[in-house]
Amino acid sequence: MTQLDVRPQEGTGKGEGKGLGGNSVGLLGSAVIGVSTVAPVYCLTSTLGSTAGEVGLQMPAVFLAGFLPMLLVAFAYRELNKVMPDCGTSFTWTVKAFGPRVGWMCGWGLVIATIIVLSNLAGVATSYFWLLAGEITDNSAVADLDGNKAVHIVTCLVLIAAATAISYRGMTATKGVQYTLVGLQLVVLAVFVVMAVAKAGSADFPTSVDFSWSWLNPFSVQSFGAFTAGLSLSIFMYWGWDTCLTANEETIGSDKTPGRAALIAMVVLVGSYLATGVAAQMIVGSGGKGLGLANPETSDNVFAALAGPVMGPTLGILLFVAVLASAAASLQTTFIPVARTVLAMSTYEALPASYARVHPRFKTPGRATVTAGVSTAVFYTVMTLVSEHVLVDTIYALGLMICFYYALTAFACAWYFKAELRSSPRDFAFKGLFPALGGLLLSAVFVKTLVDMWNPEYGSGSSVFGVGSVFVIGVGLLLIGFLIMLVMSRRSPAFFRGEVLNRETAVLVVEE
Figure 1 (cartoon, rainbow, N blue to C red):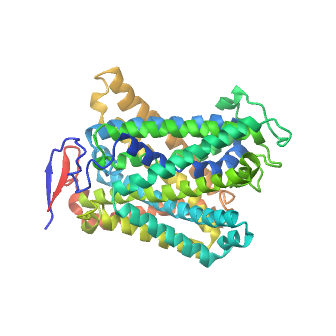
Figure 2: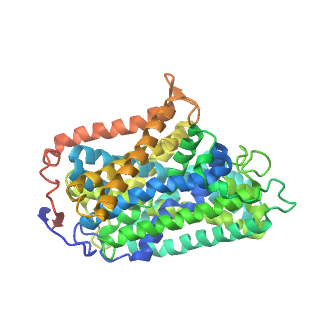
C-alpha cells in the first residue's frame, strides 16, 4: 500500500522524492539532454527555409528575438527549481502559485505538446532513415520506400519502440546515447558552417550574399505580421530545453544544476542557430530561386538540398546522418518530460495512481513512459491514415501549447515570489521582472497565433465549418484537457480542493 507522506526534502539530487534514480546526471549530461530534446539539426533543416520566406535576410535577427522570451522563461524555471526541485516542474509550480485547476491545465499543455512532438519526430526520423538508406545504396527505389504508407508506419513504430525502451531503462542509458548523437550533430553543423562560409561568393553559388550586420537587426523586418510569423517559428526551434529541469530529481545537485544546464543548452542552441543561419544565407541567400533558402520546392528540408553542393557527395551524407541523429536523439529524450510530468501528476493524485509506479530496477516512471510511447504510436498511425493534412495541422497547433504552458510557468514564478521582489534588485529582476516579461511576450504570441489559426489558409489550408483546422485542433486539444480535468476532479476531489498540493506543501515523498 502506498502511503503519501508530506515532509520537507532538501535539493540533494538523490531522487528520494518519487523513487527516481538519483545522482544519475551531472551538469554536462543535463545540458546535453536539453540540447538533444530541442533537436537543433532537425529544427534548422525544417525551419530555415520557412523563416527566410517570412523575414528574408533578417532570419538571424528573428532567431535572436525568439531566444529572448525563452531566456526570460529559463530564469523563471531556474528560480522555481531552486526552491522546488520537483520533476513535475510546470505542473507543480503553477499549482503552488495559482491553484490545482490552472496547474492541471498547465501540466496538460506540456503533456499534449510532447505527444505531438514525439509523433512528428518519429515521422521525420523515419523519412530520413529511408532517405539516408537511398543515399548510401545510391538507389532511389530504396529512398522511395518512405512514400509507401505501410512501410513508413511500420518503420516509425519500430523507432518509437526503440526510443521508449531506451528511456524506460533510465537516465544513465539515455545519457550515454545522447553524448554520441548530440556530439555528432554539433560537429557536422560546425563543418557545414565552415565550408559554407569558405565557398560563399564562388561561381558555383550565384545567389550568394555578402554578410551584413543588418541581418541581426529585428527592426529591419518589413512588416509586423512577418516578424510575428517568423517569431512563432523561432520559438518552436527552442522548445525542449526545459527537459533539463524535468530531470531535476535525477540530477546531481537538483536545486542548482538543472537551471545552469538549461542556460548552457540555450547558449549552445542560439550560437548554433546564428552561425548556421548566417552561413546558409551567405552561400545561397534567402531568395526563392535556385538553392535560395525560401525556394518552396526545398524550404521544408533545406539540408537535403544543400548537403551535396556545400559539403560534397561524401561529407554531404554526414549531414543526412546528422538530421537522422537529431530526430532520433530528440525522440528518445522527449519521453523524459512527459513521463515525469505524468509521474508527478499521479503522485499528487491529479491522475490515476497507477502512473506513479517507478520501476524497481531502472528507477524510471515505467508505466508513464510506456503509455507515452503507445499514445505516440497510436496518435501518429491514426493521423497518418486519416489525413496527412490533419497531421500537418496538428504540428502547426503545437506552437499554441508551447506558449500556453511556458507563459503560465513564467507568470507562476512572478506570482509565487511576489513577497520577495522587494528584497533585492536581484530578486526583483530574476524572480519578477524577467519572468513576467517572458510570460507577456509568449502570451502575445499565443493570442496572435490564435487569431492567425482562425484563418483556413493557416497550416494545410483545410477548414471545419469555415474555421481553420489548426484552430479547431489547437483549441480542441485544450478543451479535451479541460474535460479530462473535470472527470479527475470527481475521482480525486482532495487534489482539486488543494489538500494534497498547495503553496505550503513541501515535497511529497512516496514511501512503500
